[in-house]
Image (cartoon, rainbow, N blue to C red; front, side):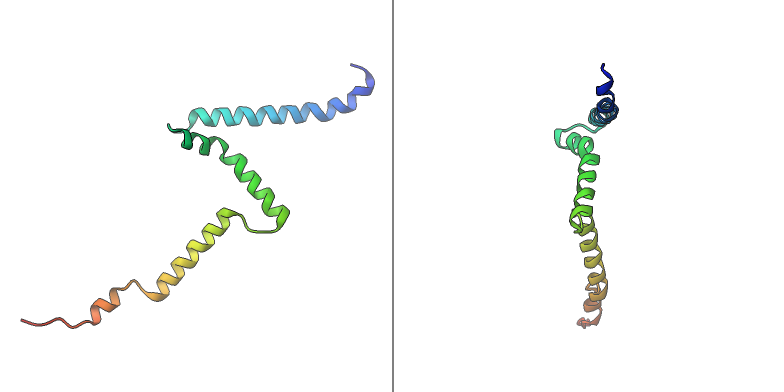
Length: 98
């Protein structure tokens, strides 16, 4: 290795080690995941997809899918508690007596 290539080696060796660590992590999560191709893919690639979503959130300034889903569920729950469960209507009806 010539002295001119040392600066490049100082950059590319850690990048290559990081890439190898990510690939090893995906393979380990693949084998530890429950049976089924979809389940294995979801478990193995989940952290990579979460990192990509977080990058997109930071880059675009928009909410990600998970945050949107959580917010919509919270809105539905709060609207459900405001409207009631529908049990009140049953209590107000009159029943014929025998």
